[in-house]
Image 1 (cartoon, rainbow, N blue to C red):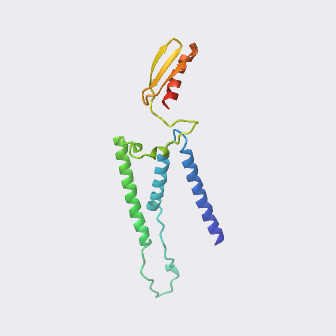
Image 2: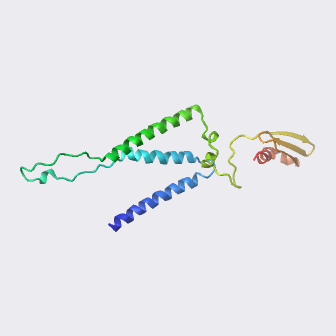
Image 3: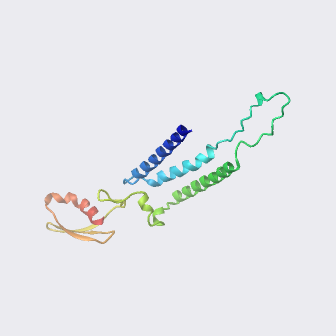
Length: 177
């Protein structure tokens, strides 16, 4: 009995560690946590649909003595299992349909949710989560370069030497972030 409990605790601990690792990896840039969360929810609900466990009544028909009438067979599944199966099937179908409609219409969930963009990327000092193209307006007078970011309106003056002209796009990206 204790060994079975330890196995169940170990399985649950392993599952929780895998969930935590997937969500932690999803915080890196260019890794989409929406896919991890969608896969987790789909697997959770599909588990109820495909892995419904029957509750068998262990009556050995061969071991019955002659003349013994076995009780009528009951359903293999309990009522709550049927309810979970139907609810899970509905959630899977509705979720898949809404996801496909949103995908095909080009809906960006981040436009409708103020904190949802943190599910895809958490900005740190090591990387930026801006995936949009940056563009700057530049004006050069001698070795002075004036850059103005088109998306946020910030402006800065840079002093360039002859070989720094290749760094203009990098300076623009820093200015716009």
